[in-house]
Image (cartoon, rainbow, N blue to C red):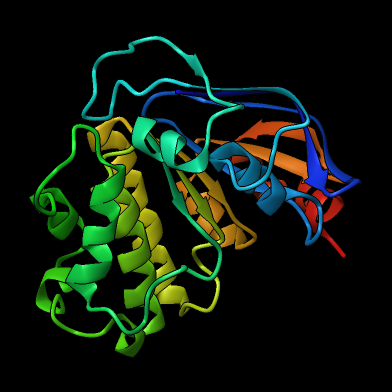
Length: 243
């Protein structure tokens, strides 16, 4: 579903990403981890088109999306962010990126612009995954709790019917018990829908709960890949995440 190869990117003339390569298959749950400032958010922004790719490729299949016109991988590195979103790349940014003065339903309806073919109403599946959004659909987004806002941010991305979903530290600022619930929802989502999910996360408990496979980033490079069970290796975690 998502294949990144040889990817270089950065800000102005400052290079951050260096020959990054990773894959996330259909229905797979992959976590990207690393210390602060190692390039994780830069990678997310480059994949979704908010930063330009200097070199390398970003290939995506949209077969889990409403459009079935392209069953193979498509190179999207030169595409605009809105074209990528309509092709099936969903993005939940760090900090959630909600419109606080709009209602829950209005925020969700913004996600409809990414669906292709264009949906006229919010899919019932979004409310099935996050029932609180249906209960609070007339409430202003800015008045929700942190956990509810995060569910809304994820729900808005799901409204676009993505084939790939990238989430940037969804556990940030959320109570631990709610983090576990969101990780479980994302597990179910990947399994049930076949969406390829890339979770950028520093919360080790959330990563263990969610991941099938894990990439570690250091100084803009992927330096280690492992299976979920390897996250129990204290020496590995200290070496790659310790301060």
